[in-house]
Amino acid sequence: MKPSPTPESGHPLTDARNVLRWAHATHGPGLCVTASFGDATLAHLAATTIPGIEITLLDTGYLFAETEWFADSLRERFNLRLRVMRPQPDLDRDVWQTDTAACCAARKTEPLERALAGRTAWVTGLRRSDSATRSTTPLVHTDLLRGVEKINPLASWTDDDVATYATDNNLPEHPLADRGYSSIGCWPCTAPATDSADPRSGRWSGTEKTECGLHVS
Ligand code: SF4
View: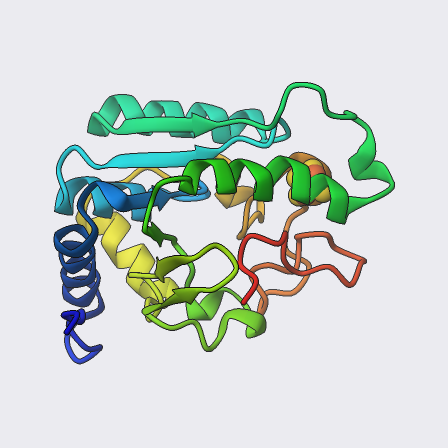
């Protein structure tokens, strides 16, 4: 019978580290950790819990320059083993203006699927407090679409947990964080949050779109 991660009974940080240790023990090189680098939390937590673990950044080609800089500075500072996945080179550069679903499919989903090729598990930084649509995010479940186990070690973390972790570990902040960007994606589709109760309200703001397609169930 497959072992299971520590249940959500202790401190969120302890739980998250236990989940990551369990994931690594269970999946070994089959583990793919992705971080969006909107903050330093998951990259730092993963790299300090599983030394030498590869951290994957999906670079859509439309990341803010500040995100590129932030990821690179964290790579240097914490000696991250960073893997950058980019979209195929022959894409229409303007499609985000007319078809965000097609743009996300080509610039996020397809590179993720390449990143997961040959892997058995995917670690994400999803948190239940990110948005209403993520409020039931489990610690571990099967991503049926991609045929991998999906592991969300920060699922139960609140914004305060993230802030405390950053303070305790002297983590730098993304340069856009103090300009109202509480969730940071691609520059054409990200604005400062419009609703303080919804950290993702600046993403695709003014449209019905709330997710890019990476986190479909
Ligand atoms: S968030 Fe916007 S720019 Fe980024 S991949 Fe999706 S549609 Fe394209």
